[in-house]
Every structure is written in C-alpha cells, then in structure tokens.
Image 1 (cartoon, protein in one colour):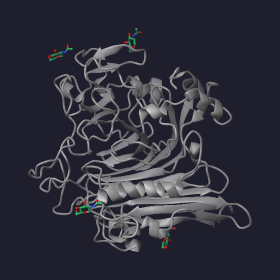
Image 2 (spheres, helix red, strand yellow):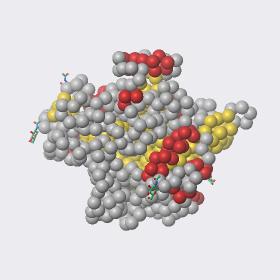
Image 3 (tube, protein in one colour):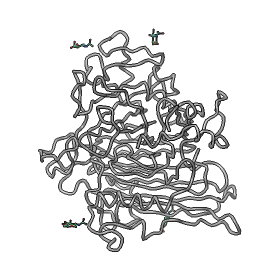
Image 4 (cartoon, helix red, strand yellow):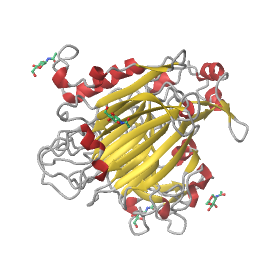
Amino acid sequence: MMQKLKFCWGLIAILLSVSGGVGGNGESYISAIGDPGMRRDGLRVAIESWNQCNEVGEEAPNMGSPRMADCFDVNYFGDIKLIHKVQKWQNKLGISNSHDLVTNKSVDLFAAWKEIYLGQKCQVIDFPKPWQFWMIMLKSGNMDTLAAICPEYGKKAKPFKQTSRFPCFGKGCMNMPSMYHNYTTIYQNEKDGNLMMKGRFYGSWDLEIDDEDEVDKAVDMNDISCYSVTWEKPVGKGSWVFHHLLKTSSKYPWLMLYLRSDATSGFSGGYHYSTRGMSKIVPKSPNFKVRFTLEIKRGGGPKSQFYLMDMGSCWKNDGRPCDGDVTSDVTRYSEIIINPEIEAWCKPTRRDQCPPYHTFANGTRVHRNDTAHFPYDAYHTYCAPGNANYFEQPANTCDPYSNPQPQEILQILPHPVWGEYGYPTKKGEGWVGDPRTWELDVGRLSQSLHFYQDPGTTPVERYWPSIDLGTEIYISNVGQIAEWTVSHFDIIIPKHALLNSDKGAS
Ligand SMILES: *[C@@H]1O[C@H](CO)[C@@H](O)[C@H](O)[C@H]1NC(C)=O
Ligand SMILES: *[C@@H]1O[C@H](CO)[C@@H](O)[C@H](O)[C@H]1NC(C)=O
Ligand SMILES: *[C@@H]1O[C@H](CO)[C@@H](O)[C@H](O)[C@H]1NC(C)=O
Ligand SMILES: *[C@@H]1O[C@H](CO)[C@@H](O)[C@H](O)[C@H]1NC(C)=O
C-alpha cells in the first residue's frame, strides 16, 4: 500500500495547483480529502459498528450487517432534489438476507464486503484517487472473556474469568447496536427561509428497545444506551454540521463514537480489512495539518476520553508495512484527550506509563528518567506493542484483545510542550463552553512522538490512514451523555511537501 502512495507526488502537486488555497502564513496547500471543509452539498457519509476486537461477531436482529451509507447528488435544476445512491434494501443487506449477492461468508467478512459495496455506490471520481465517504464509527468495549471471542495479540485466545477490566453482563454482551436511518431530505428553515438538508443515523445497544420511535427517545430513558449522528447544511453554502450524541447504560458502560477520515484503500487504523473513506491522499508526517470546528455541549462524565484528535496507522515492529497478518501487524494510535478530568498516569514514580523519551519541538530529546526535564504531565499513558521484543523496561504493554492485531498507544494531554503544534496547552481548552476552530499541526507532532521499532531498523515513513475525533466513554457506572458538533473538517498538505518528497521515486 505504502509503495503505491509514492507515485509521482510532483505530478500530483502540479495537477492540484489549480485547486487548494493559501494558509495564514502565505503558504499554499492542497486538501488531502474528498470534501475539503465539509462544503460539498452532495454528501457522502457511512456508519460502521465494531465489537471490542473490531469485528461484528453477530448481526443485531433485523438490522443487517452494521454498515450503512447516506450518499446523494443534488439536482439543482427545477425543484431541487436529492438523488440518493444507496437504496434502503442495500443498506439492510446482511448475512441473513443476502442469498443472491453473497453466500456462505462469515458476518465479519460480510461487513468488510458491504463496506466495499457501499463504497462503489458512493464513490466520487477525483484526482489523484476516487473517494467514498466520511465514516461514523461505533464501538462497544464489552468483552465476553469466557467465550474467548477476541484474539490475544492476533492469536486465538483461551477463555478466562471475567474481570472488571472488561465489562460483560453475560452471554451476548458483545452485540451490535440497532441502526436506524433517516435519509437526508430537504426542508425549508422557517426562521431564515434557507433550504436545508438533514439526515440521521441513530440506535441503541440495549436491543430490548426495538422500535425506532422508542430508540429516538432513548436519550431520556432511564438506563438505556444510545447514539445519534445528525448532519445538516444549507443548500449551496456553509459547512455540514455533524451533531453527535452518545449515552452509556449499565449494560453498555464503555462506548465509542468517532467521525473518521479514513484512507480510500488499504487498511485504516484498527481495521484489518480493505477500507473505504475520505482521505484520497493518505497524510504523511511531518507535512500535514488538520482543521475543524468543534463544539462540545456535554462532556460524557469523568471517564470520557474525548479525543480532540485521534490518528491511527499500522506498521510492523521491524518497520515493514502491514500486510494483513494480524500476528505481526501492529496498529499504532495516538490521541490527545481534552477532558480536563483525565489525569496524567505518567509520573516520575510511574515511568512504565510514559514513553521512553520526549522530543521537544526544537529536537532536544529527554529520557523519562530525567525527572528535571521530562514533561510527565503531557502524557496520559503509553503502552508498548505486546509482540515487541526490545522495548525499554519498565513497560506497560497494550491491551492484547481490543484490536485484531497487537497495538501501541500513546495518549497525550493538553500541555505547553504541544503549543508549538497548535494543540491545547492548558486543561479545559476546547472543552464544554469553549467551542473552537482548530488548526493542528498533526503532521509535525506525529513525527516527533515516540513509536516503537526494533533497534537498528530504518525508521518508517509515518502515514496516517485514519484521522478522526470523538469520544471513548470508558467504563462508567452511571449513564453518561456526551454531545458535540463537528464542522469545517479538512486535512491540508503544503504544496512544497508534495513537490519535494520522494524525489526520484517513479
Ligand atoms: C461454505 O461453507 C462450508 C461449510 O462451512 C465450507 O465447507 C465451504 O468451504 C464454504 N465455501 C465457500 C466457497 O466459502
Ligand atoms: C425520521 O424518520 C421518522 C420516521 O420516518 C420520523 O418520524 C422522524 O421525524 C424523522 N426524524 C428526523 C430527524 O427527520
Ligand atoms: C529545546 O527546548 C527545551 C524545552 O523548551 C529546552 O529545555 C532546551 O534547552 C532546548 N534546546 C535547545 C538546543 O535549544
Ligand atoms: C532509567 O532508570 C531505570 C531505573 O532506575 C534504570 O534501570 C535504567 O537503566 C535507566 N535508563 C536509562 C536510559 O538511564
């Protein structure tokens, strides 16, 4: 995958020089994504749901495979009309009702197939590559350890006793949520007369509520989980505004909801099947920035790890690109958590929770043993890939079950050391009551962060097939609600980076 990305960057930059724009510092840039700034009327959006190990396991009754899409073109002639690309029966496809199209496949493979299928329906021809959709991602952290459904570091796991680390109320606790859909429609806003477009996906993991009108009210019901994503935009102007809501219940105390810009092919962060997405150019460190407007209305409680920015990639410990072999591929994640209630676990007394070193923006590196200089408060936690042989002790290895492959995670917190990259420097920045438009130098930051590689191997070029934001409400005893909006999302690459990189590559 990575080889293919390298083709003729110079040519891409020249051809794209007609598009793009100029940043605040006068530098010209191009967008890496299909819908720069979320301004395109003809929306492309899809939804996916994952269990604890990023699979389906079992489809929810009557819901089909948990992949759906809402994609349309706008016909502006005469009465404005939306021409939908994905029909209801296609969104409903599942292993149980797909006898004609695909037979004899596992529900996991079927969902991967359905994503590609929906991608074909939604695809927009563009340069340098076609693109398909924004991806709304849902995940529940419940894990049935007795059923040993999730592999351990990519290998078959043995059953073990349920612990508080992995919630599960009993058999079937890893179920997929219900998934209801209001196709995008046009309506006239009574206040300003604007023509508006609006659509929605929503559902609940608590499947005993199985009526769409009831699920619609789940946010106000006692101890019923739910999610909802609504998108809205005036025709011909402005940005789409994605309005997200996520609520936990006692049976589903660990839930995630993200809006992702994934690669249009290859593996995106955490997904070991070929993916479809929005990033027609996969951004590469250090040369890209991410812009968006975020308003957090409700935080989701003290355990809500709201990721202002989450990036996912994959490479093997020896530096080779991932190839789908889940025993040696390693997913790499880094997130900045902006909930001010989340504390640094990395401390002088808990060096196992810190990366081995920190690199300042000026290139100076300090070891975590250097208590006078290491910025402990800048790190929530670090965990090393469980299949790595040479990481520095003391170390904490990542959860072996919550991905199809081993993983490495580096979570950071607002701190002055990140100010250089446009990241929040103080707790509370960008949190509830402080909506902001961000321009994060994710490229340069991600180049400076520590990620594991075997000693003596060539440092990998860091490509980020998944760039997303949203929240992970970690095991919470009471029903917690997070609510936020995202608009004007873009990933931008300076043109000089396309012209100067990979010189001599064919
Ligand atoms: C279909 O399923 C059967 C039984 O599980 C298996 O033996 C067979 O190889 C499968 N065929 C295909 C084409 O996957
Ligand atoms: C969604 O569709 C349902 C059923 O068709 C309808 O009752 C409801 O008003 C719609 N909701 C929105 C937000 O459009
Ligand atoms: C780099 O920055 C760090 C932190 O601000 C500072 O302590 C260090 O002296 C700087 N190094 C150089 C070479 O300027
Ligand atoms: C850091 O401290 C630990 C514990 O004292 C020690 O084992 C290790 O060798 C030190 N590492 C470096 C690079 O100084």
